[in-house]
Image (cartoon, rainbow, N blue to C red; front, side):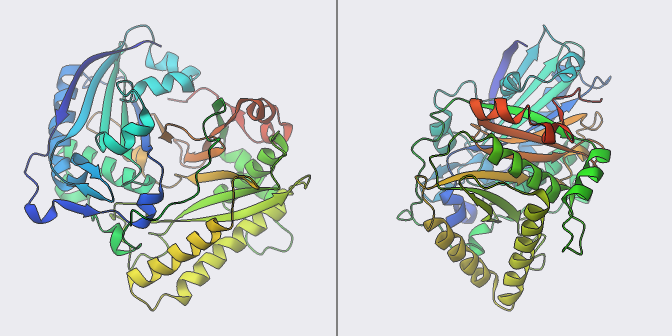
Length: 438
């Protein structure tokens, strides 16, 4: 697939940001995140309304209106704050002449997928995510009439739920329905987690991204997930595991068996939990920022074998522990709960070292309503969520279009991936990069 850029411009908010909103404080969680982008790809099949000129104009004008509400996304990061200076977001137009959308979706090339993001103009993407625009968008038009929208928001200000809220607002604005369907975003993550401080530093993995990594897509159908949930149910557990718990446990088992790096004493699995649903009275759904709780949920020593039902039981226990902990401090203010959770995360991570621990991460985008993002020419036929640049040892889970299956985008070092993609237990439940059903 050859993607050709046909235009690039800066989109500014339709209204000037008031002086009292010019500086946004980042939280300690925002500050600790590496300089990467949270990214989403939305693919739309051919529709009579998708003419590149008309569509591009509609996307840009509605984005300008949306940026008035999401004003920090038109600003720039300045240390531990965002300078909401209305400098604007980058919007790139592009086209593909040598490949139809249906041809691409028949066997999606995940390397080619990167071409649908507006990061190609960036020399050093790591540096870019801390100095470049907070928001970059690329609209790519296929000759057949289909299109793809690639969205990048700096992870310093947006987790997956924030991305979903932004896309939902922007698409409603494009349809002329923003007033009735979406709540205004709230940029108050630093009122929950403590404000960022330049002196705080987390350990850095010096080997990160030095190895050659590869991303593969594994798709779990609804029927296979039911089989997996049965297999993953522990006899001691009263509750049947969720889709995400079952897939996480299976992937963890497969990660451990595929790992060639046995120099580390322990392999650990880090899971991210969105706190909005756990603290709905304090954290509104429209809260923008990183309001996640990140913790080690599973670990295994050298030579230990993972049992799926035990891993699932441990995941359920960790979820209950987090809920109990939140309830125990639940009488306090939002900032008090945030401080306690932040301290707990910092204490736990301080015990880890990249010399002795090999971390893996599972992040779930499931249940985010990204397949409802209609800009006026129908719903997406395929949605992908990830981060850019991609990290190794990470799995991103996202709903299939039917809302019942799960697509897992897994990034591992090449030698580990060649083992993982041949794992018979994984392939008993997941298909490796099947055709996207439009």
